[in-house]
Length: 388
Image 1: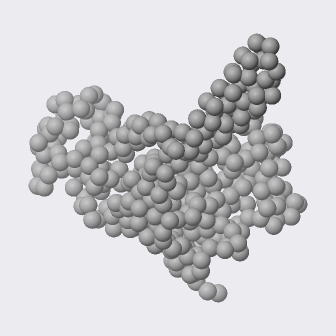
Image 2 (image 1 turned 180 degrees about the vertical axis):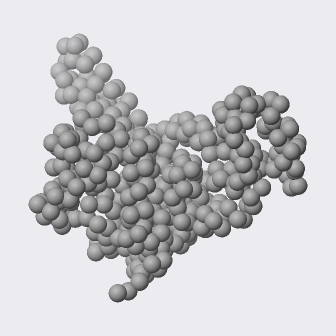
Image 3 (image 1 turned 30 degrees about the horizontal axis):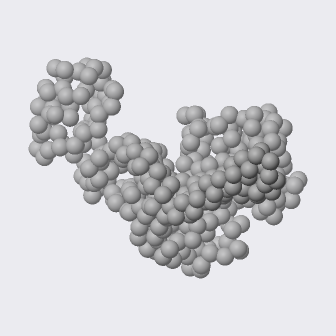
């Protein structure tokens, strides 16, 4: 029996994708191996989903190459891939098990086999009692679990998951993580994207950390952490920890409500640290640790994931109005105004005693068509502007 462990399954080189107003992916290269969990991580809007869509041949890259087992993507590869999109794509009016069976049939699985395997997975997620329920009756978390089942029921060799923990409670996140590790043991390759650095840190063998379409960190989690040293302290406490950021021996800090991670200057005695903090907060835990991926990201990029995502929201607000000045929109607005004008003139003249109802009718039809086209163009441009 051949040993495929750690052999390359997917290679992407120098991927680039430009949308109307956004350079979503800029020179991204990555390699995913069998028996590995690969984390595509970064803030919301970093370019993760666009990268995944290019890997799946959903979106064509403007530049770059993608190879599966050394070959370009083709139809024969589709059934060896399982994909969980960030946005749900289930038929909400259909029954849960029927939906699972339908998606399995698209992968060439016969109905009896699909029902049997589908029920086994529903039991795994404690959803067996929902088998005949309509998808729309399920909670957000249960819909996420159902879509995950449709992604892996056909036993794919490569599993690609976009924000797989979205909507899941802690218990089901643990179930999902256990399944990831099972797939790894079966020599599958798993790619999952997330903005949750902690999940990636615990699960991944390798990571590719993207910010604003560019790679800022890559490699095994172990090597990334080694590169940034181990001079970090993790604190758990009660009280106001805001002062921790201003301590003279702290070079970088991540401070939350009752938890903090501090990167220290070299050679700081432990007693000095304890003396500075115990006088102001009630310390529950103190330990030297490797820096987390979140703190490493902060060190490399100079700001936190949360701050970047906040700035991204503001960018979206300013980007969307800019799309409304697009030439296509200007043309349709002009057509809409002309149609309205024809309608008004036709009505006025007709009411004055002259038969111009045809003009009014033509203007009304033209107005409706222009309005529908305008809405369609605006929706497309908004999607492109907000696209990763």
